[in-house]
Image 1 (cartoon, rainbow, N blue to C red):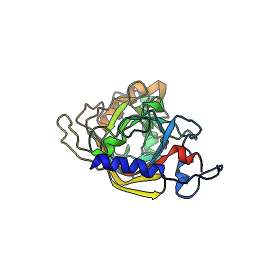
Image 2 (image 1 turned 90 degrees about the vertical axis):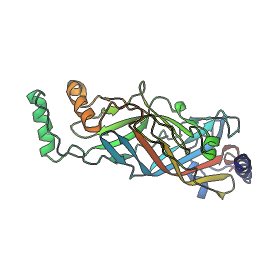
Image 3 (image 1 turned 120 degrees about the horizontal axis):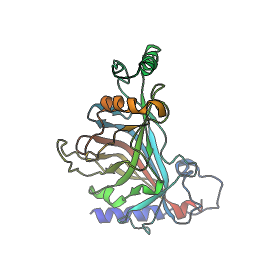
Length: 287
């Protein structure tokens, strides 16, 4: 049944009428305007919107309240849904939108450690006293965009990784500085998001995702609405770069104590809920 679904989906994508080429896609196709269609190797255009979910570490849970977009072109699978696709960057450069999510609690109630040098304690206390306690987290792709892999067959068949996503999380606050991260390009948080059921190490328990509801909103485009991608088998590195070059040695441990990092596999969870759209690139090039 699932093989028939994949065949039907592929056929639906290809059944789009050709027309004269235009400068930009319109209507329901407009979401693919940042797809790198000029790259002839791109087979499909991806537009995935996350509208709900959460990211947890042992000491913090961050709800995903603000919509986040992952977009670009898929290549390398030779039009076969069963093979993993490689993501190609969106033409605008915002392949993964840098959407900030508020961290519940922020720095509220946190006091400067007694062992900090006085200059650092004064800086921290001044920040808190001025009301700058809010912290936001922003997920960014770690390393080249080509590190992102998409397996559409896995997404539909509820098994294996549907999205392989190496990421890093930027924590932003006036005191933390502009380069405070969990994970890095060389040591990323490696998400293996599935629509199926996870098999995490303890203490986490298995959780399940969902492929969503299939539809064809317009010819040449398919969507999986209300899908749910999950992973609770990944580890999270400790903080780095927090407080700037001068104070990272002291502030990184504070951040780690607030969020509970570094955190081993089996103690973290990512849940992403939203809608995934897929457009057939050869047809979109002719529109």
